[in-house]
Amino acid sequence: MTRGRVTAALAAVAGAVTIVVAIASCGGDNAVRPKAGTNTAPAVAPAKPAHSFVVYGKAKRAQFVNHADDRTRGDKVSAFNADGLPTPANANSGKKGARAGDNALISIVLYADRNLTRVVGSATYSCTFNFAQEAVCDGQFQIGAGTIIALGPAKLDGSQIVLAVTGGTGQYAGAHGQVTSIDGGGTKSTQIFRFDLI
Image (tube, rainbow, N blue to C red):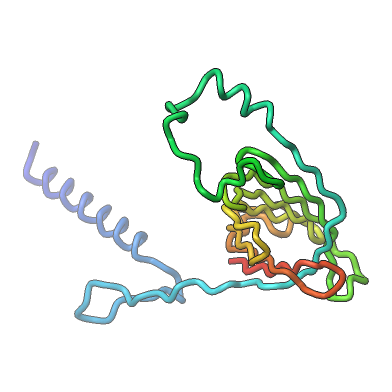
C-alpha cells in the first residue's frame, strides 16, 4: 500500500470516529453538559411521582378457597423435608381463619368520592396466604380507560397495604409506582386507594 493510501485511510478512520463521538454526545438543545474542566455530568434528582390520585373502594363480593385437602396430600409427599421444620407460632394452625396456601378473591367497586356516589371503576384482589395474616396479593384496578396492575406482599391485619405497580394498559400503559390501601373508617367499610405513579 502506498503512503498516500495509508494517509487517506487514516484520515477516513479519524473522521468516522469524530462523527461517532459527536452523535453519541449529542443530547439536543436541552442536553445537560458537564462543566468545563470536569468529565462527569451533574447529578440527576430522583424521579417524583408524575401522577397521584385517590379513589375509594367498597368490597362487593369475596370468595375464599380452603386448601385443606392439600395438607392431607402433603402428608404423603413432603417437599424439602418440611416435616422436620417447626410450624411458626402464629401460623393459625387449628384456629378459625385462613391458613398458609389458602386463597382469597375479592371484587371491589371504586368510587371518585368518599360518599360512594360516583363509580369510576372496579378492582379485583387475589391473595394467597402464608403465615401470620400475611399474603402475596395481585391487584387489578380498572379505572377510566385503562387498567393498573399491582403485586406484592401484604399484611392483612387491618393496617395499610402497599403494593408495587408493575404495569398497566390503556392510559396506564407502562405505569410504575405504588398503590397504598388504608381503611377508610366509618360505617360504610370503605378502603382508600392512593396511587403514586411515575
